[in-house]
Length: 258
Ligand code: DAK
Image (cartoon, rainbow, N blue to C red):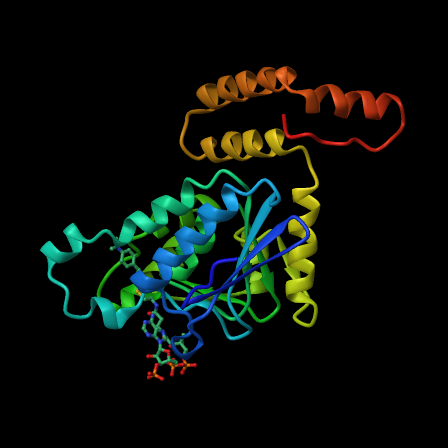
């Protein structure tokens, strides 16, 4: 396994774990960390032994945002030319499911990173927010769009216009996160979830991720058409034959990923 300056990376079963590791700055996302994150994600995406990826931080912070120190003196031209946003785009291109396992602060670009992941699970102590308004800016890595789609306009406006932070319970209630996991066994439970997902048919997982993500991009009619095509495509896979045969024969399926 490669070693990184700003990440801890390991696998457990078929789950790949990436832990953001700049604790002294509450995992503030600078270019060096984001560059390594993309490398680690791409390595897991290319690894047949991995079926699902978990991104997490530490107990105190998933990530307290993009690194403010790195941006404080930037000019508009420098921001326009900055490749920084391309890291978020690269995260979005990962084909395997990604679980954001959030404990502690999940703010600004950190919240935007979590929202690009496919599932967000929260520890009881997680706090979410888009506090950019307090810095004289707005969310710039998709927050105004993805938060609005996740929680609806009124809550998104409330959070983005006031910088209001929300608790894990509120995030669950608003639909930003799918589950709250107990603080004590948080990472173990997130890895269990990732291994549960990783145990499913790999091609169907990839296609399911593609279909759900397109729901945010397309009209209903276009999305339903895409879904139908992807659904039909799966009947060309050995895993569909195996999955249905296993059901009929009352035995567990053995997936081949083809
Ligand atoms: N950046 C840099 N350093 C940070 C940081 C951040 N976002 N957040 C925390 N730190 C550092 C603190 O400066 C402090 O460092 P030292 O002073 O010890 O050297 C250390 O982490 C511990 O933080 P605190 O002492 O402040 O800890 P507290 O427990 O008192 O407070 C806090 C925790 C999370 C409430 C507080 O640290 C805080 O408010 N942090 C800032 C949160 C924030 O405003 N986040 C949004 C950042 S802006 C882009 C697209 C998007 C973005 C950027 C570019 N492009 C399209 C190019 C995204 C922008 C953002 O995310």
